[in-house]
Image (cartoon, rainbow, N blue to C red; front, side, top):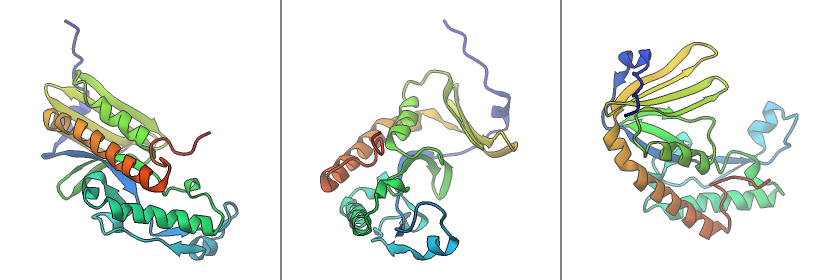
Length: 216
């Protein structure tokens, strides 16, 4: 039987969290910038914009909506993206040049966003994280290091330990622990829900803007 690594030292100081949820968030922006793409003045960035239709979906006012909250509200999200495409076409811009089609995994609990992934911007990134939760192998589950951002997720004795920090500055954002089984039970449903939502958006708009982004 293979040796199971011990939990990292920081796990002993992890904060317990109940009812942890996983999901994928879709960015929704309130306006479309149509100005120059370089040498942008603050005034241009603020004024050269057109408002976009904002869906009445929880979280939209904060700039993102969870796939769980889009169930039954898919038409409203489609309308947001249709408006984006229309405004971009009016100004001869490629809407994919910005962040409008970004999505990212999130870990949250009731009334509390625990971890978002600021360097992940496509569903292919989110899928990699979600699928890493499925095997249930003790030890390292997932890790990612980006500029000023590091995530380390470990599984030991049925508990997930999550540390999110800035190793460059020595700042700890989160040091958490929570039960693995309830999180694992969500993986397949979240993947199916997001894939269905993207299929619905793709059918409505004629192209999948969310899974991989711009083709090379």
